[in-house]
Image (cartoon, rainbow, N blue to C red; front, side, top):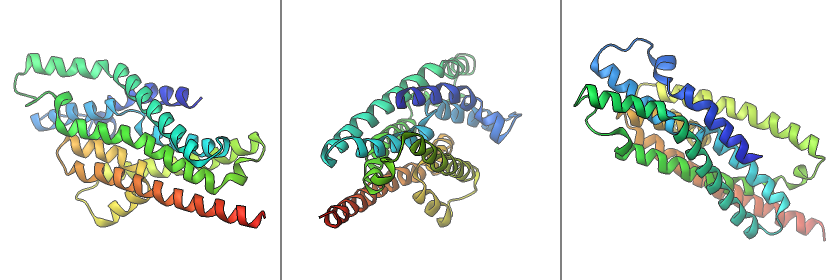
Length: 253
């Protein structure tokens, strides 16, 4: 089910992200600078479609693995494999769904030589955004194992109750993180408060990471914030989960 959700999300979001500049930034680019930003942003956004919701799905999947797989080490191994699988599926679907964007690059390259200094798909920043975004899937799944270990009693409630609680938790979290990410992408400068917010909500850094890197506006800072904060949250949740499990085992004696 998780694989299907990730694939569906990437396929649904790719056409939207392929027109990201027109919809969210400026709908009538005229100057060379505006046209260049349009192409670069839509290349980055289209090929990372689904990375935001994919991380949240990986987190939820990791939590369920923690409740269903006996032993944390086995749960972690399963979570890493599941996260890598989700990342591969997301990228494959996003790539396939972004063929129109690559055709646009080819058109610009053929009809306006020099308009794009380098092939965007060969750009180091593009590779960095892709690598960190894909690595965030298994990291989120590992964080999910910690979260699942922490709230194991809740995950053993009837399936309908668990499903309702999951939706009630994931949708507001995802919506708030998505809005935060959009504001971070559109903000001027890099205020400390913005990075604090993104550190608290690692998936929120997906959009500013892609947009700001595409236009050369300190995107690395957002990309690195997503990775580092994701790893830190994974470690914190694992420690909290271990402590909670130890406490439950002592109280059950």
